[in-house]
Image (cartoon, rainbow, N blue to C red; front, top):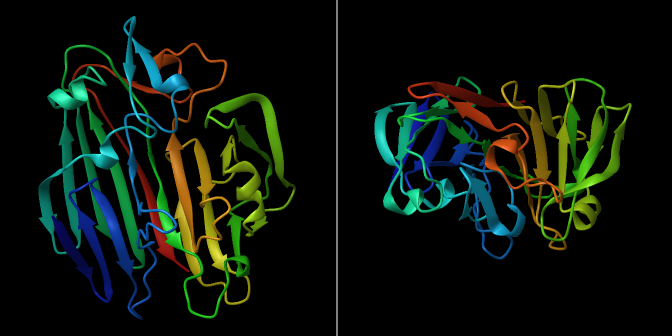
Length: 293
């Protein structure tokens, strides 16, 4: 089921399937969110929970037992419940079910709040431990933006510009989608800007950064400066992705609290980098914001 949000000239749409914000338009009618054309990629803005990325051999060990889980977890394919709604916001909830317990043996509550702002939107992921033991999880966003935003523009006309200058290398993925120990690709060495082209994605699949000085990044046209700014203060990692070898007209900005398995990792859930563990009754909220520029 889909719901429309409105705040002044801004509008958005939210879908209970996956709990996603699937549309955001400004007052001029410009659509910022990718439309999910399956010729390129059928996703739009999936929620990554309770894992981010791929597991080694598709399995993870929890309390001495192995469980199977698909890449990025099950939230993106789950039906959420509408818990609250106002003119400019919606809160959707996902709880454990027999299906989730077979892959992730924990009671939980995932609350996702999508809120229109004066010049954009915010998304908040709140996880509550509703069980009687520790709850480990990872969470992230996979927000796909149209790139280019306007007819007559090209993907290559756009830039990713961090809030600060960075000396950063992208983590490298194996062909199985795992993080390769000891391998990094030089992407940023001093500047704050990544000029967009499809070539890096054809080679690396995903640009993945941790330990950045910046807590925000702009996706903007090189001449007009028009685009979006994403603030990701609550997340220790940021990734950028578009389909490889497809010349796809979108790019995903992905704040992560967690990541794919390392090729040499133990396989234990709680050993995953940036895994969050909540004690019974504890809750934690992580948010990111997107504003037009």
